[in-house]
Image (tube, rainbow, N blue to C red; front, side, top):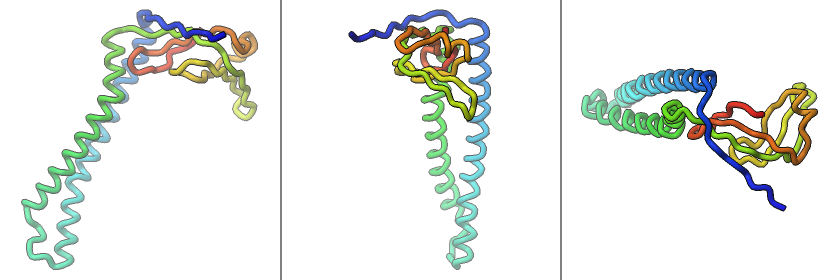
Length: 164
């Protein structure tokens, strides 16, 4: 007998929305920081290359055309990379904030695990979004293999929000 997974949408609670907004703010700050660091290196590498060409004795070592062409190529590559990462991760969080919805998935416990070295309890589920969750000691004792478990996560980004 196959147990079908059930998913439905609910509005985000204020605390969950605040969590997503804070996460988006941190992510946005990290993207800016990484982008500025990459831009610094995009200008540093052509400059270092010019000094290397000067050391080798090239006649046009400090050519502005070579410097700006190399810098433009590097800036383009870095910009595309940061934009792709934004589209993949941060945009989904922003869509969740805009829509203000979360997905509740009813899944089933497939395995229980206690990690004694960390004193933590885990439940493995048949969910495709969240395969294992850390639970409290009480939840670990109450749940058995095959029991239903509701997992909440943001709809677009799949950010884990909780269980019940």
